[in-house]
Length: 340
Image (cartoon, rainbow, N blue to C red; front, side, top):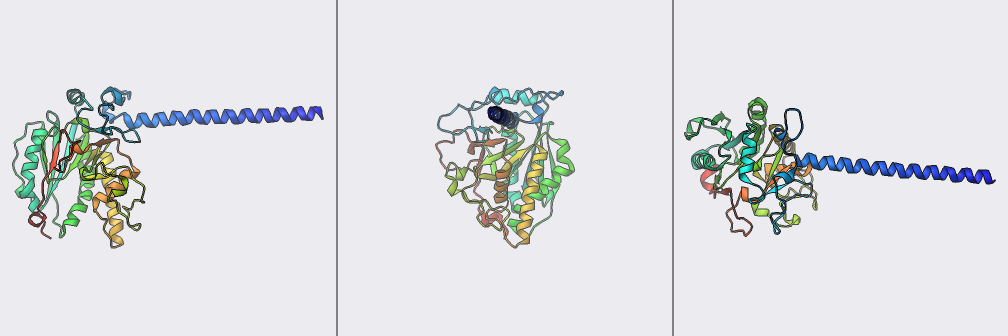
């Protein structure tokens, strides 16, 4: 009996040690995976790597000051930086990307009366403020190429005009933008630029919009819904819609007027949003804010690696936290620019 009792004690002791070891190993790998995930999210774009694959500037703290403000959020819960004026050194960011021969693309979508009303001012102010000193390709998508204005640009900045079809409703124009962007990325953009921004034409650049905004997947906070509470975000609320977000879920409300990233990431975003649009269309419904609702659903499932503060797309309303606006909305006067 004594021998059996000792044997049982030994077995229990061995089992206990095995459990402790398993828990220890599990915790170790949990920490390692979490650390790797954090580094991956903060490492920045692949262009910030040497040819041998090692990182030159993957540490966010090497260029981003997350403690710049006590009254503004500068980091998302998943560790992505929220870019405000004062959280980075613009000279350092410019030099960093110039050394890597970065090429930045921008798509802008102008159809019908939007060409005459907005396009010239948009392009001229972009030339004054968007990625100054860097190589830029504008991809101007229009339904009447003969109306595209001539804008003077230096040799390292070029404009490509793409003819697109006319659409009967402005809602269709808005939602089909995603399809045209994804097709253009697949056809040519993926081999021509390092990063891509997709920006609405009814905006004016009024301040520096530099490479501090570049990242693998970039989302823009909607100025009109910042910093309101989650319950006030205007997400799609019908469960049958592909854009539906369960009440209580969500991180931020993102603006579809501006998004960007690496071409492959923007391709996945636009394809994902368009798939949602088509799914809704098959059911005879449209999301409350059209492609913007689908964009917010996409960002819920695919977190941006960089988030732009409302400074980068300001709604012109007086706001104490807007110190250095980069883009401002233009009053659209829908009755004058929308044909239906």
